Length: 129
Image (cartoon, rainbow, N blue to C red; front, side, top):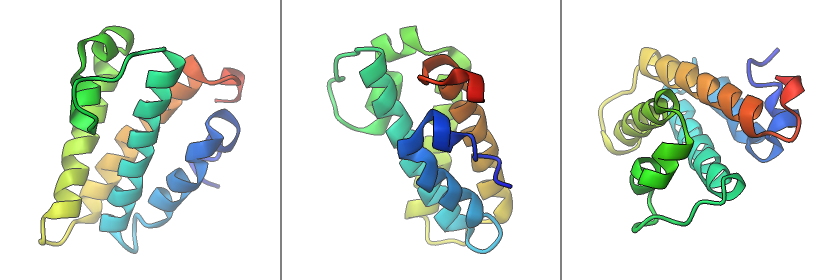
């Protein structure tokens, strides 16, 4: 059973990437990080939509997370987790060194916390979390 199984009901557009991120944890930590990054990019875009936020000055993940309106609408704990995931996944994508399973596990733990928060607070079906 996947830790992210609930996402199929609460945030269905992100379910496939959540499942892939989790499935690659042991076999390919870099891919686990890659799919986790896809999820947080989707989560941030989703939040911009449901919170009716205007796009920031730049259309990249760092600018979106650090935008004042986003930071005012999303708890600091969540923005910190998003920033942490963004940084770790940037390293996983751009650094030629091997990515350890411990890094991917940390990313997945943080991702699960973020997805639970988004599902609970901004999903049409928060009771499924």
